[in-house]
Length: 432
Image 1 (spheres, rainbow, N blue to C red):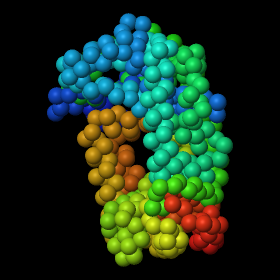
Image 2: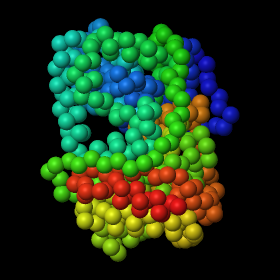
Image 3: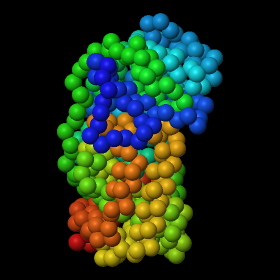
Image 4: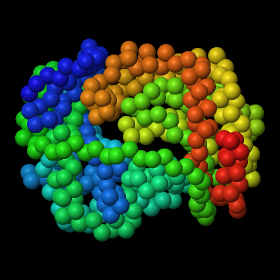
């Protein structure tokens, strides 16, 4: 086991070690809390799946808790809950994560429990058939959600046929036909030491945690890093009518720089445009025009892609006016930036970063993303400096670059006739 010494030191409470097989162990010393958060991250998600395997990462995540070589599903749950611990997991486009949160004194036991789940799951046939029905219920719930539908359409408009466009939950057909051998084969290919980070945050002894991680994960086989080629941005308009809904859900966005590029101006631009009630988006769309109860703008920045995403839920009769006003507001930001809006955006991002720092699970997630992208953990000072250094001209130019590209637009719920053509015309006119 060797210590990892980054070129740019992380915060003083952050310790990183790399096991001899490539597993990285991240320890965050938080002496002010009595609990501990243990999370095991695996660099595999829906963007690593072929079309035929879309959704398998999510099924593996569900099935990982259904039995190991040593423990049944019931024993896995009881072992954690006897210690008062919460157990959870999630799948995303770029990773899968397994979590336990409990008393700091039990941190070592949690590391071993998660090691058993991640490394030794057997995916019993009987459990697979039962869990398949649970996942199909989850799929139906997701399919019936118009905002979720709009986001799935939006990703297709952004990324076309690239795996990043695939939904994490997969397709109904795939969920219905995955076999135990499919799951075992996927785990054997994707769950390798070089793609795993064990994160531990709490009132802990880092050296003791490194030893526990070595015992639980040190014999995990190595494997190639699960890397994916970056997508080409596409753009376009798509819609889907869903009976039974009275609202129209809009998701509109543009490409922005990735995490590996100079993306800070785009972060500020998104916060400036639609973060908070006093933002231009909410002030105009809701407060002055009554076009929506809720609207927001965010910047989703990852290693392979960046998206500035605007969402709003409105009535079918107000959809076109809503898009027109959003387009007008974007053009206004590309012309000039209000200094007060810039100050607000910077401070909102600073508070958001502070809140991330104060939540152990969010801090681990952000740190692990840094490890996957940069091979190191960026410090709070580095993150703050990146935002503080953004100028009004850079933010204005960020808006101008967005408008110079083709927008990706998705509409779901109650969709007026002719929406695709009308919205396409409105957006094209605004970005011309």
